[in-house]
Length: 356
Image (tube, rainbow, N blue to C red):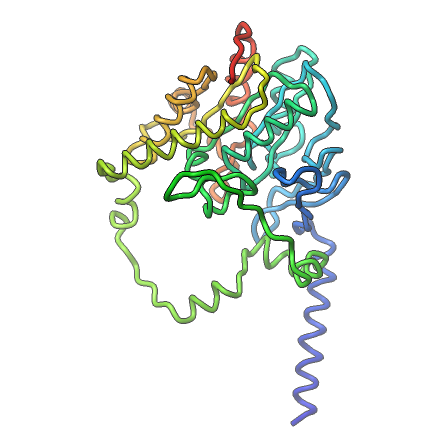
């Protein structure tokens, strides 16, 4: 009995070793080594770190990235430069699935065409209050007074603690009071598995989670009609939901501006993502939140470029998608170009000091 078990174990070990060796030859996403390397409120990569990013089991859109001196995915280092433009956001700014020349910072710098460097301060999985910390960093360390922030439709609600999109400052989801919620350091097993191509493939490409698998084994899922699945996204909000959403947006915007250093911005531009189908896609609570966020930002003197009408105009004249693909809703090079053209137009307006 012991011999068959030993042969079986050896066979499994050989298959695991073979899979590890094969995957090391392929562009599997590698460990990013993110951490609080420069600032307790900034999640960055180690300076000079090289890593690979790809999507899905078939390793689509593989790209090799490198971190600059401040730990951001950028093709040049950052330093004091009052002419520079800070481009701030989450994975929409980092755009690791695009070729370097197609990413937002490179496109914005090319569209501006005036020699000003664009500093790409993008950190995936972050939200509006984290952007404020990065804008403070750009002000304090680089003397930047022109900034463009790329916002998703959910960047306000994702600033709530526990959203999964917070690396530092956030608001309590009930009281809306500010607090700190930092990511814990990786455990020893995580540090070991970071160096395994097979482990990275299971985690990054297949999104395999043992806990989810165990839960699914004991959970009975039943099909639901499409109407039942989508009703919650488009149903009109109740008065209580609307009031809470407005209060949440107000609190996030107030905390955003209170975080900024006491330096007036020449240009503070927000490029706000929207539905890309051409039809009105902002019904319900999502639409209310987005519209209220845009209104509050404009009331504080920011320049807000609403991408919804830009996308609608594009849809009216072309059937070309603005997304990377059905598997990835991030902007493709054409979508990035449309967004950066709007950002550049705002940056060319006469300087008007913004901020508190």
